[in-house]
Length: 179
Ligand SMILES: O=P(O)(O)OC[C@H]1O[C@H](OP(=O)(O)OP(=O)(O)O)[C@H](O)[C@@H]1O
Ligand SMILES: Nc1ncnc2[nH]cnc12
Image (cartoon, rainbow, N blue to C red; front, side, top):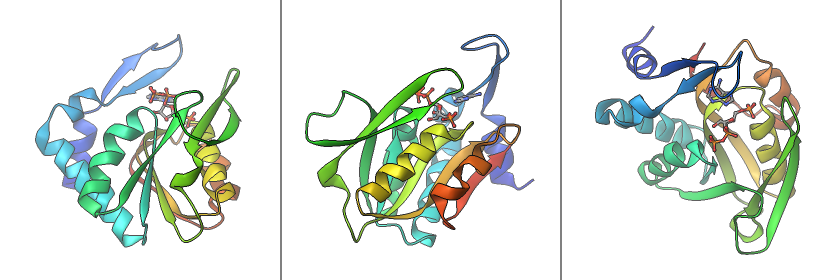
């Protein structure tokens, strides 16, 4: 494993049975508290954004905001928040999606994305892929192009990558760490 992967992995804490029994929660707060690790992560996400020709970063609430916003500043592109439904004040596009149990909805300001934009989606964890898939559907419905999805950590024992295949339509899914 490369140095940066080892550094990032060493700063992610496993919390068993959170938020419910049977779930191994990947807690990124130790990584955020370590300036060397957070800087390395920001640089890596910004590099992927530039390499894939993105003109905007979409961050997925809430942890995708923490990672996506500094990466957007570093890459020199705009940051667009995709929020849980009911939080954005302007005209929105919404997309419902299924979770392991139940369903949820995310929204984006309609005016923030349009034809000509190339969007990199950034989040901390890819688990079932439901959140990322819904964000890709939103981006395409807004008329924008998908540059890719970049996550800190992919949980490879869940079918997130497979679930995203159709929505990615050939765009890259980049995971800095796979567990
Ligand atoms: O691949 P999925 O199964 O969709 O899961 C991944 C999503 O779940 C977590 O967010 P969560 O909805 O817990 O919100 P939070 O960032 O506000 O804690 C994580 O930050 C991803 O956004
Ligand atoms: N196991 C997990 N750890 C952290 N965030 C998650 N989001 C979905 N599953 C998760």
